[in-house]
Length: 325
Image (cartoon, rainbow, N blue to C red; front, side, top):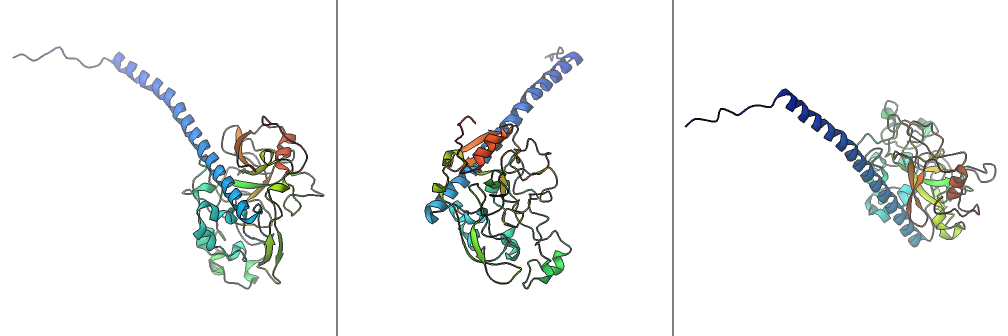
C-alpha cells in the first residue's frame, strides 16, 4: 500500500502567525496574572490586619485595656509581643521575659518570625527579614549582663538581630508636639507608651511595673473612626538596614520599628522610594491598609487629605470623619 505522500510541514508564514498569536496571549495573560497576585497579596495583608485587630480586642476583653505600644522607653516589650497569646502564640509569649529589655532576650526568641507580621506584597518571613542595626543605645560592653550572642561576637556581627515586620501601631497624628508629642505617654493615638516604672540601676533597664493607659472607652472620636494598626512605610533598600526597619519586638527609644504617626506632618508614603518620615505606607499601589479600633479593615488612598488623615490617627480630636474620607 502506498503511504500518503502529501503531508507537509508548516510554512514560515504559518509559523510566524502562531508565534505572534502566542506572544499576544502572553501579553494579555501576564498583566492578568500580575493583577491576581497583587489582589491575593492585598487580601492576605487585610487578613493579617484583621487577625491583629481581633487579637487586640481579645486582649482588651481579657485585660480591660488596649495593649500599649511598648511597656517602657528602654527596649521594653511591644504590642507585637503582648498580643501573641491571642494569636495562638502562647509558647512564644512565655519565652519572653517582660521584665527584661529586648537586648536581654535570647536570640532564638528575638529572631522568631511570624507570617502574620509580614505583608506578602513587600516580603515574606523566608526572605532575609532579620534586623541589622539593633544595638543598645548605651555601650553594651559596660552592661552587667551576659549577652546573646556573646560580646566578642557582637562587635563583628550585625548586632542584636530580631524579626522585622510590616505593621505598626498608630501612636499619634504627629501634631501638638509641644503638648502631646509622638513617642510619649501623652501621644494622642490608640497605641501609645504605657505608664511604667523601672527597677533601680541599669543599663540594661528592667521594668518594675507597667500598665496600659487606654481602653476603648478612651476613644471619644469613635472606634470606627480611629486607626489602630496600619502598614508601615519601609524605604526601599536591604531589609533591616533602613531607618524604621528594625525589629518589631524592640521597644527602643526611637519607637520607629513598631509605631507610626499619621497627619499633615506625616503623610502616607506614595511609593517605596519615599524618604522615611515615621509614616505609614505600603507596597500596594495607591493605597495603604489599616485596621480601625472597631476591628474593621479599610484601604486608605495614599492621596488622602492630610488633615483628614490626622483626624483618623487622633483618638480625641473631636472630628468625626465620613466613611468615604
